[in-house]
Length: 204
Ligand SMILES: [Ca+2]
Image 1 (cartoon, rainbow, N blue to C red):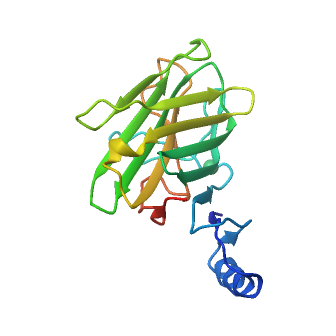
Image 2: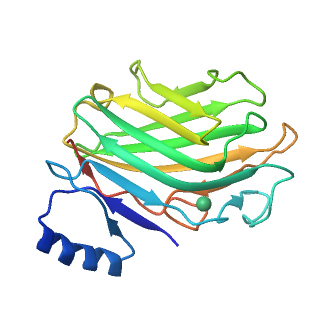
C-alpha cells in the first residue's frame, strides 16, 4: 500500500473533487497552504523491505538478524532556500550500518544524489555524506534516534536554483559488518528498485 499527500490551496468544493479523485488514485490531499504545492508526502507500505542479495541472487523478503529496516513515510519539501527530505522509519538504531539515498531531478534536467551513511555505534551527530555534484554543497542533516526520523536539506543553489524538483529515495540497512548485502526499502513502492520520480515540486 503506497500513496502520496500533497499540500495545496484549492478551495473547499474544488478540493473535495480533487480529494475524491486523488483517493481513487491512492492519494490523499491534506491541509492548505497559501501557494502551490510545497510539500509532498509519500507513504510506504509496512514490512515491504527486501534483502537485496544481487548479483548473487534475486532480492528476498526476509527479516534481518536484528533491527527493523522498514521505511514508513517520506516528506519532500521545496522552499525558497532549500529542498528538504524527511524519512520516517520503524526503528532507526544506533547499531547496524545505515545508508539513506535521496535523488533529485530538476526541471532543467540536472540529476544529483545524496548518500548519507551512518556506521555502527557512532555518536549522535556523526555520519558521512556523499554528494554526487562536482561542487561543494553545504548539506545539513540529522539522524533522530528517538523519533526514528532522518532529515536532509540541500541548498537550492546546489541544484542551480530550479523551478521544480522531483525526488526519489530509499533506505539501506546492514545489521553487522559481516552482512554483505543491504536490507533495502524504496519509498512509495513495495518493489526493490526505483520505478520513477515523485511529482515535480515547486517552491512555496
Ligand atoms: Ca516500508
